[in-house]
Length: 114
Image (cartoon, rainbow, N blue to C red):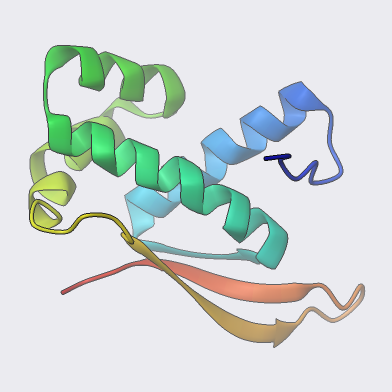
């Protein structure tokens, strides 16, 4: 499946995704464009799945991707246990409207709270 380029080269795209996944896990919700949100979902799901595994190898993989160590600690200690019974679908996308200026579809991405 081809990925979205998001108007950036490979290095910038990876940095962008690392930043927005870290922000989502840290704050619980972020506002971004629809294309970025759809791409973000896959990476956020992978990070939470790593958190649910809970072993040292998973923690090291998360540390390699996420930018802040305290976010990794929060992911493994507090966030992942909340989703222990859920088999996926940890995030929700809510459309907010169009951005003034370039009319990009803006969305709110948030963690699902049962």
